[in-house]
Image (cartoon, rainbow, N blue to C red; front, side, top):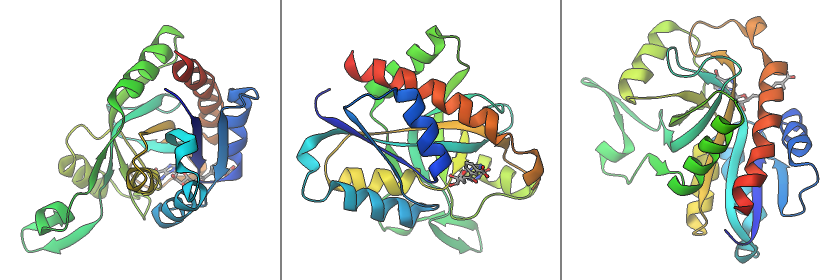
Length: 218
Ligand SMILES: O=C(O)c1cccc(C(=O)CC[C@H]2O[C@@H](n3cnc4c(=O)[nH]cnc43)[C@H](O)[C@@H]2O)c1
């Protein structure tokens, strides 16, 4: 892969964790975009505008909720795709995504080669990691019923966060490959903010970011 890597987080604490893991790699630029898909898309597009040719990869990185049985707290999820899981309409038959409604797609693929290389590097390093769809939502799930509905809507769903699809949408408009890396801080389900293991997740994000550098240069 040639060119620089633009890494978008939501908040400063995530940005700092990624920077620690990157250990001063001059090829990488890290920005905190703000929380949610709109801030993520706008900030990524602004970062790329007029200099998209400088970048070979765009990364959405941060903490996330993990789906039961797919991604335990403290583990890493590498996205196979970013899914805008609440972008659509409620219908009498249930949720219909924008794809079903005829307005394009709500799924953007991650770069499969880079994602699988990263997964392999994490595995070799003994860091628990899995590959699967990462959902982007504007509202953090707070009940078992919503968690079940999302898992049924997106078979194989591994994690949910709030920015990946926005970052991916901007990257795709500029024709730049995209990946998403999430460190799991909490289980997707009934709200228990006090139980979020943010410190552990940020440590896992830092460790995963170290291997991001390895993957990029291989
Ligand atoms: O309070 C802190 O110290 C702190 C440090 C780092 C990050 C945070 C955040 O709250 C970041 C919000 C960010 O987290 C993602 N996230 C995490 N868990 C979930 C979830 O279960 N569902 C959806 N999003 C989740 C999300 O991408 C937010 O941007 C706090």
